[in-house]
Amino acid sequence: MSAHRSTGRAWLRFYIVAYVVFLYLPIAIIPIFSFNNSIQAAFPLSGFTLEWYGSLLNNENLHRAFTTSLIVGFSAAFLATTIGVTVGYMEVAGGDRVSRIISSMARLPILIPGVIVGIALLILVNLAGLGPSRIAIVLGHTLVALPTAVVIMRGRFLALPKSFSEVAMDLGAHEWTTFRRIVLPLAAPAIASSFMLSFLTSFDEFIVAFFLSGTEPTLPLFVWGQLRFPKALPSVMALGSVILLASIVIATAAEIIRRRGAPVYDLPVTAKGNLPIS
Image (cartoon, rainbow, N blue to C red; front, side, top):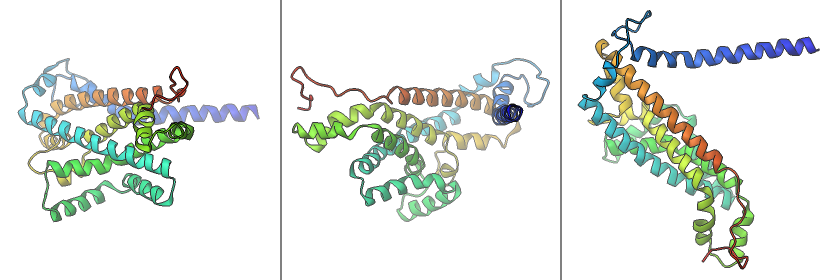
């Protein structure tokens, strides 16, 4: 029995290592070749250079695409997080069938293929008279990032004891006051985490932006366009390395913030033993 367990654990370790290598080795190759002193992505490396990173500083088209991605990302993250807070709290506090249906529909886009979402949104914005534009991308990315925001906020609101709100309302606080003074401060770390991950989702999204972009492409669309030119490949890998590093930093920070906000603190009380709800 012990031998079977040891064999099973050995195969499990091998599977995990093989999976990690398969998943992350192609990603690790990008930063390696971004320092290669050659336009050919091949081993052995011909030398070390920072030229490709320097070329990113003088690319006006890149700067415009980066600015567009920032504007779209912040806008979509703000809208997705705001809706996520509303939908998540509505489901947890309301608990009725309508609230659960709305919450499920808000999480549904994560299950729909991006191509279908892109085509549907393109038809919708054309019917609305917006056409492919920056506003259309913001709306599309809000839809794509919404499931992430709803899942995070729903989980946070479920972790808050209902007694917090009940005690506040027993002491005379209105429902809005309770939400603003009790629930939102306790949910603030999750809100920050939701905003950061929604921004990251929007910043890296390609398919929906491909259908909805007009004359202002986002950064992923700019990268895709540059892949047609072999001489631009080293600069693309340098840009990809920067994006990879930024994504890791943002995702790590979001997770740290979410974990630090996970514990539920004791009810804040005044010297008289009452909640500070006035």
